[in-house]
Every structure is written in structure tokens, then in C-alpha cells.
Amino acid sequence: MNTKRTILIVDDNPSILTALRYCLDSTFERILTLERPDDILKLMAQQPIDILLLDMNFTLGVNSGQEGLFWLRTIRKQHPETPVVLLTAYADVSLAVKGLKCGAADFITKPWDNDELIRKLKDVLDMQNEIVTLDEMEKDHIRRTIDRCHGNLTQAAELLGITRQTLYNKIKSLTPNPSTKGEGSR
Image (cartoon, rainbow, N blue to C red; front, top):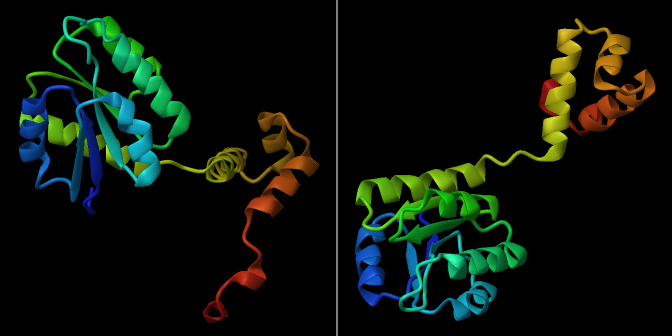
């Protein structure tokens, strides 16, 4: 992660928010905090958030993690591109699995190790930069299949489960037009 970004931390404990602010101060350009999850969507509508660190429990005495899962699903519906890392004091493997199945990018338990927390957040942000478009994936898959078939388009089309003409059309649509290349290539 080369550029500093904005993180939103949502936890009902002001001490946790303060500790996380100090811990993440040199990693993030902006650190926004909320004590109540009710304001998450409003804040996210007002400004871009690069990553969200979300506590799992907000009601005193409730430790099921259901509140965090509810907010995770709600955030993912409105902002599917924003990674959410779950934060909880209760290391529960089944809860972590539920969170990941609901779209969480990762899971961190309290108390956390500062270096590990920073590493996980950076890894999640770095993974966001590695998203490949469907066209790029298709182009790469077609290229590898043609290479595997030593340039035999009929055999490659057969392996891909398409007709030779469809393969030819895909190659044509995925290949840059030579007239758009720079003049320096002559």
C-alpha cells in the first residue's frame, strides 16, 4: 500500500477507538471513527472510505456477533467495493466463517497485535488493487489455451467449448486495433 488512505472504524468503546487511532495514525491519512453503526451509511455516502474496521457487538451484554453481521450485509449491499474487516473480542471460528461468507475481507480479534493488525489491513487494501477485469481474465485464458494448443484455433475452440468463429471473434474483440498503437512502432 503506497498511498495513504481513509479508514472508518466503528466500535462502541471510545477507548478502543482511541487506541486504534494511535495505532493506525502512521498508516492511514484519515481515520474516521463512529461509536454507533447507525451512522455508517450516512458517512459513507458523504465521503469515500477505503476500508472499514467494524466491531461485531454494539449492545451491552450481547456477544453473538449478529449486529456486526447485520451491518456487514447492509454495508456490502450499499458499498460492495469497500472492504470490511470484522473486529471482535470473542474469537469464535464459526462467527469468523459466517462473517467471511457474508463478504468480510478479514477478521481480527481483540486484543490485537498492532503489527498484525496493520499488516492485515494493508493486505486487504493491496488485494483490492489486484482485481482483474473479466475481459482481462478472458483474454488471458484464451491466450493460454491457444498456447497450449500450439496455435491450433480449432483445437483451442474445442477446449474452450465454443466454435472456431466465436473464438476468432473473441480474439478480434480482445486484441487492440493496430491503428490505435503509437506511431513510434513503425
